[in-house]
Length: 170
Image (cartoon, rainbow, N blue to C red; front, side):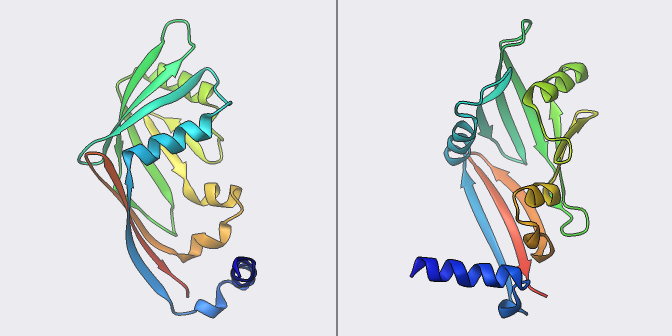
């Protein structure tokens, strides 16, 4: 049965979700800090380079603390405070902007180099990390989702990051 649904969904994806025309979905997806940390550790398993994320702490008012480990000779641990912009202008300009504090600018750029962020997806400039969500979805083979996202918002409270999401099939 599962493989049948997968085939149906794949045909819908290829047809621009024609069978769902006119559908709209609005929702909230709360993501707990423990799940985010588990996902980060899983993604980094066996791939640790010169800098890695040790742990994040989700705080109130769209603030997140990040603890980085590093093998850079003058740093062993780095703490960053990230301020996440709450609104992402989907689908016109799907850029997630995160403002970084806690480090000098040159060190932030050095860490960007060591984290090996794909330049078409993520760039740090003037203490702002900009993530192109369209490019990230395209790289993941999910460009079909970009026109469906009508809005995306992010809010935080201690221990939880919540995604506010609106999807519509034209």
